[in-house]
Length: 520
Image 1 (cartoon, rainbow, N blue to C red):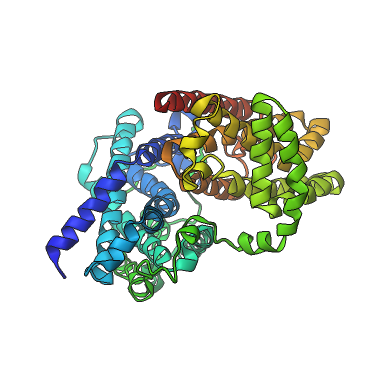
Image 2: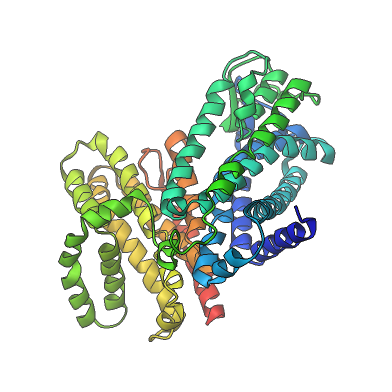
């Protein structure tokens, strides 16, 4: 391997990624989420709770708790941040140049893998600095920097290796370059996360051999805590505690030689996806990857949309009505009509969900709302970026009102699509549970603003999609926390959480307005 070429390619990857606005947006989002999820003991919540007793926020506790959170955030979001460079090479035309160079597939992909790991590693260091600041505010005892570095390295490096390896593999296979790969990885991530927790369940301090396949690091984190406390009643990631009970202290010496060996083996196994990536890499061959196919969605929904393509004709009257409506109203309606034309399955989903919401029992509205929210989020994640993907952003920004009106129009279209999907459920909630209906409306307005803001700032739909899927996953599994119940499908949202989402949505709108005004 040519080391000079490898270094140049890897450093080029790091520079290109760190200069993106999406890097700053992702770092700010992760910092806000991490501070929110690392409970403040003064409020009755702690990141690690043992038998209803909180564990003091020493360096190893904050490091394990924050690293466990980072395993989830970066394990999912890191994939969407790293992948996509191959599609950009195809769309920009540089892919043909790369394919014609004498650089081998192995050197090219390994250098991109190294650049991706270095990029996520830089974000991880910034995340750790955020946790060090949190330690100064909420911590118990001095900061032990070596403890942070040890825990972060052993828990998170295998996860980073696996995440970037999967991103490289999915970008190397033409059929996985689009949303099909995005959705497939989400299920892969959920499976390996659940499997790691299931495998390490129990009181036994023995480290099973299968732990080497715990790429996420969650299982290893649970084993660390179990080595300090002989109990299965453990809450990792946040939970309430009894303030009357004396807090516990997690021992400093936690790592056994076997567990360290398992994490090293996990890091080595995390490189395995690179082998099929090298063998299956399309090398920008025009008979495998075309410009149109690099930009279009390849999810299974594409097959369904192709089958339902004749239904797109039913949307034509909306375009004629949009042409007659003046100003913003016509533009918003045109955006909605374009969304249904490009995805006829969404039109069927809206009609089906609306009819179902009218007839299903009240207890079934929650699961129906969860499905509606998921379908809506996947549909609208690229509404604010599709003019960039189609290379028409200069044209759409030149119409009356410019880029600022475009941002407001896309936000309004996103929110109206949300009410099309979930409006009937909100109406039924308003008759018996008005606070729940308010939470649903607030969630739609807030998430619509965040989708538009992240799309315009980052220039890609993957940032919002990653955070949205992560939030949905957490909401499905944590059903008792009002602030996590953004749409109210768990039934625990309250007026406070609804007002908080409205405030976040307002801030996102102000931020989006400022960003687009600056761009204009």
